[in-house]
Image 1 (tube, rainbow, N blue to C red):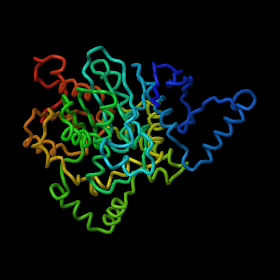
Image 2: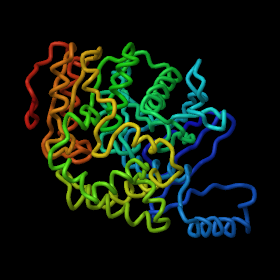
Image 3: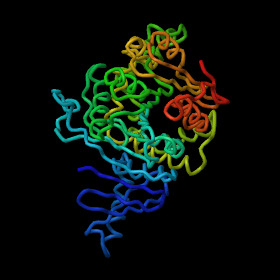
Length: 421
């Protein structure tokens, strides 16, 4: 059943289904928040007792989260966005048509879905699909939705196995299978929402998936925007002498072993149980506050993002387990995009924050082999999460690389503050 969540920037939002509707009141409180719903058993005198029992169950649970928590946290975070939106669970079936796998080898044939958020926009606006990076979800773009939806029909998704999307058992055993998990689920999603022409934007690992998708399914893409994208270089091509020395030490050997054992950041968060939210709060406070290279989060933004990040990381492991199959220790791609640059068929733009730890030189080398229009833009006061660090600069970069969709004869002059490589 497809579930739609219509949000119109207020504290009360409606959760609609094809068979019924139920009002949910959204409130911001502590980092760990529990979604509440009314049932016949919670009415009258039994309601307070049931809610109290639910809260105690959450407190006593070692990992105080669930998929319902993710959607509730998403609603609270997106309450900061003034543009109305709809939230939909888009069915992608149980596996690619004709495939022998069921996303992939899951013991269940249950249909899977992609959590999708679509913002209201002007009629005939170009469609922009936004794909998040590793360990993230579409809510990370919360500072960008309002501006971009004034110019695009913005659709943001949670990749399969992340955020509010289905989390099938991850049983991929190779790089090829793992890439197919994300690429083919994205294509099944496109078919379900009937998109025939769109701009695809991916961040970090989401950029890697977007690029691989464009190589396999270029037909419906108008433009490809890769933000701080990972995966252009292999370890043998760009491993530094310093990194090689570190790997030869006992510390490097231990970390490499943990990497190959698929120890993910989310596993650490889960292992900390009720102390996990505190670690996430310290991370968001430091990354987007104390050590931010641009616009720091205000208190409310920090609180709501922390809540959202915790729940997306701590819920059932699924897509996160792709890590060791896509990258080797050091975040080097096992199947580098650079090797496929000559096969590129979609006009492409790269956007990097000037302080991004992802090296833009990989994009420079790829452009030399491409036979399509390609530009590389660097945004000031921005790191790897440039769209959070410097949203104004990021928006300027997106509008510039998409200028042909608004004014075919637009000037190629770089906007003030940005730099072109």
